Structures are given as structure tokens and as C-alpha cells.
Length: 212
Image (tube, rainbow, N blue to C red; front, side, top):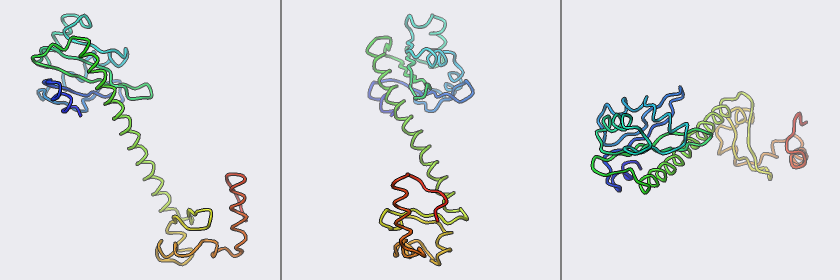
């Protein structure tokens, strides 16, 4: 995404900085800069200013004093640059850097461009983090389900077996899940009517404990 945006806008470089969890920053992606650039910029106070103030900074412009602008552009080897907020949700924010060695980026149209790209990238990163957390949670659940020494299973209201762990298969004498799914679970109840009582209780109360 960063490469596409830089190419389409005719920019010489770009970078994405994210909080590193220790009040600092890390460069998550960089394009078109010298190898040392992310090391120079990651501790830069300008990133902290953007994260705290939620505002876009342009260089050269009145946003920065001459010394700050010169230091930033010198590190980038660029004629102009924009640092914009990259919202990550839950009060967190990163920063988007765009730079050019021949364009003047100190204009409202470039400010709007950087903020739009920053919002889109922030949304994509937030969704990615959420999907990663969900996948990790599902993996942990699956491991607990499969490795539990207690027989566990999931059924539909009509008694079809949807899932079961190895402990249940061993308890009921089945070698694999497909074989167990070939029968309806109520057939394993000593008193089949107990299944109906259980389903009725779940429907009425939402959960059941110590059912006998």
C-alpha cells in the first residue's frame, strides 16, 4: 500500500512508524530511503509530537521551526516532507511519513492526501491486529478443547454432533470424529428423554450446571 501511494503521487519515499510499547517508535515499513533513515527517525521527537497532538506536520512550513525542518529533511535527503497521524484505535496512534526530493508537499492538498492515506493505513492495521488476535484466540481455544482430559463436544439442538475432542471419542469407543458424527448424540444417553430436558433447560436459562 505504501509503495502504491508513493508511486501514484510521484513521491521519493515513505515510511510507517508504530509505537513500540516502551514510549518509543519502530519503523514498520520504509520505502525509498537510505538504510540509516529509520534509525535516525525512530527516536525523533516529531513522531511523539504527532502521536500526542494528533496533527499533521509539514516541512518546510510554519509547522516546524527552521532547525527542525532542516534536520528532518537532511536525514531524509528530501526537499519536503509530511508527517501525519496514523490512527490505530483504542487511543493509539502511529505516524505516516511521506517525502519528496522534487515536489513541494507543504500545501493543503498534500496535507489532505497524507491524512487520507494515514486513516486508510490505520484502519487496515487495526483490522489486521484484530484478525491476528482472533486467530490466536481461536488457536488457544482449539488447543484447550483438543487436549482436555474431560470429554467435550458441540451439538446442534436436534442432536447432530458438530465437534468433539479425543476424550469423548475414547469414552464412547470411536476411532475418529467422522465415525462419531455418523450417529446422533441422543442415542448415547442412558435415558434419551434426558436430552430433551437438557435442551429445554438450556433454552429457558441459557446455561446449565450439574445436570443429571
